[in-house]
Image (cartoon, rainbow over all chains, first blue to last red; front, side):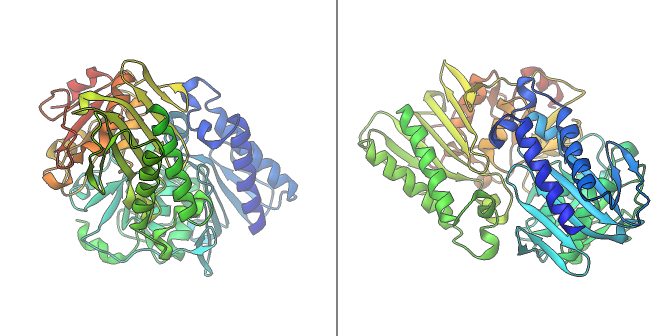
Length: 256
Length: 256
């Protein structure tokens, strides 16, 4: 199952690259010159479905595009074929494929992989074993008020907490790609990531964060809901949640 | 002089890649595993200085690292060897080299080039001739309240205007790299970019924005100071300014 994750991510990278015509730098302009747009998600998901078939359909599939495909297996592959479609289509060079395997809910995820489709970087986590980026161990950062960096979802639907937090750190960033924003927490580049909105329909789905929640936790961080409970969600296509991830729980003293 | 820009950017890309050991995906983790840190700026600037020498020192040089090198020429090469050093050292995959040539002030810039050092994309503008990304024409976006995207500098030193603007659009992004944030405006991915701070020492230098101000204007956008005057700055190492860039001046109706 572990090699299924790596091979499926590789297949997505190849398929997206092929669809873009040539090199990754050109893909980044895709939407702009009218080339296939929503196509990118379909191409990516098809590559994953084919790979699961090659592996004898040993997992059920929960995907943003197809909802739930039941192969009568105990394990489910949770898929976000392209996380950051908006970026990909508008020339913002950050988007990824996110894949996780587990049972029942977020706490039951055992393997999680996110591949950055521009740089090719691979984040990987295994429950109880650790987390790595391109094979190097991931370690979240200790809270450092001087060099603080918060990753915040902002805009008209953002939760009021985000506007409050935007005034506190030295730096604010946001990639607009939950799996990669979580990657910044896991690798210690961000001390905190908040993706919370007043519009329920914009909240994160389990497919957006199944893989990254695992590798943030394995890297030494924690992921909460807005009540400060460790985040859990059923492996269900309709489940949505707000999310607060931290590298070091000490940063919570900054969160009103 | 035009080919000096392209060759110098190419030389920086090669030097940074060599310094990182191997491929670009690894460079992105550079700081994390203790590899040469501030070194990246030096390596990049040395590559540019060598290239200028190869071209017979036909330009003076204004650089973040060396201030002003006077070769007694009418034209000055304005250099930011690495824009986004913080990102590069913390594993955030967005940083660039920015190069421009002109006389006297920002309005006197004739050629501007920004190379994204992760994707390899090249933004290029020539006064009165247009602007391109990897050879395709750059065109800013018309204001679209429904699909609005603002690129905002936030954090504890941000100008109050930024917090106000953070509540208005559908999406907010920030790369933390002025030359590339300006690129998002030029290519129509962002409708507005605000980099304004209450700390004068954090404001943008002319070397940060000489190239990108030219290509945003050539792509159909405008770049202002906070008094809404078209931005101008002397080609001087100590000059600093706040900046508001727009793809379409209609968006100014959203700016209080």
